[in-house]
Length: 295
Image (cartoon, rainbow, N blue to C red; front, side, top):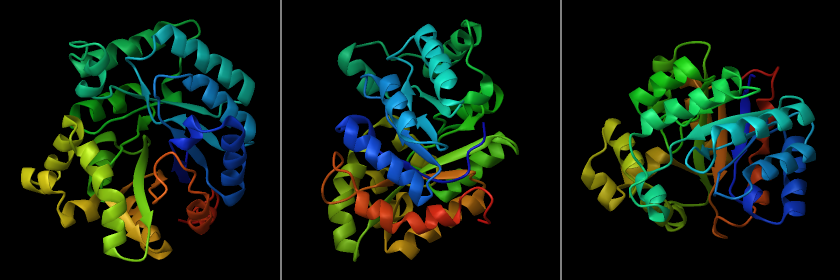
C-alpha cells in the first residue's frame, strides 16, 4: 500500500453524527485529500472505518492510531480482512501503544513494557488466519526503538505531534522505501494571540503525557519549554497563520522525507466540531499534491 499527498487527521470523523461524517469524508476526497486518519477511542473503530470507506472511492482510510490495549490481534485481523475485501484494500492499520496514564486510568498497572506489547501484538497479527500483511500496517513510532520495529515489521511509521526535524530523523531511521506518514497540527488564524488562545491548552494536555514530553526533549526542548509551553515549542509543533504559512510547514515535512502529511485542524469551535471551512481553505495544498502531481 502506498500513500502520498496530504490527508486529514480528525476526531469528529470518528465521533460525530455518522451521516455528517460520511458527507464530510466525501467532500475531503473531492478537495484532493488522499487519506483520512481517525483515533481509536475504545469504541467501534472498525465500524467507523467501514462507514468512511463506504463514503469514499479511492482515498485511504487509516486508524491514527488503534490502541493495542483495546483490541485483540485476532479481532483486529478479522476486521482488517473484512474491510479489505469489501473496500479494495484501502484500509491502513495504524497501531500504537497509547500512554501509561491513559491505559492505567481504566486498569491500573496494565501499561507495562510497551515495546514488548507491540511485538506481541504484531506476532498475533502475523499468525492470525488470515494474517494482516506487513505492508498494510504502520506504527505510531516516536522514539528510536519503536522506529526500528516499524522499519522491520511494518510498512512504516505514523508520527504524531512532531516537527520536520523529527521527520528527518524518522526517515533516516526507517531508510528509503518505508512510509513516513506525519501528522501536523495546524491553526488557520490571523495573529499569534489567536493561535495561542486556540492551541496552548490543547498542547499542554498532550505534553503532560510522558511519550510526547520525551519526544520533544529528544529534539532539544527543555523541561522549562514544556512546563511553560514556550513560544519556540508551540511554533515548532503547531503550524499557524494563513494558508501559505501552513503550506510552508507541509513542504518542510516533505523536504525532510515525509511521504504523506495529514493535517489536524484546531479551531475555536473545539475538537468535536467539523472544521469544514478550514479544510476547504487548505484544499489547494491537497489538490496540488494529488498522486501524479509534483510536490
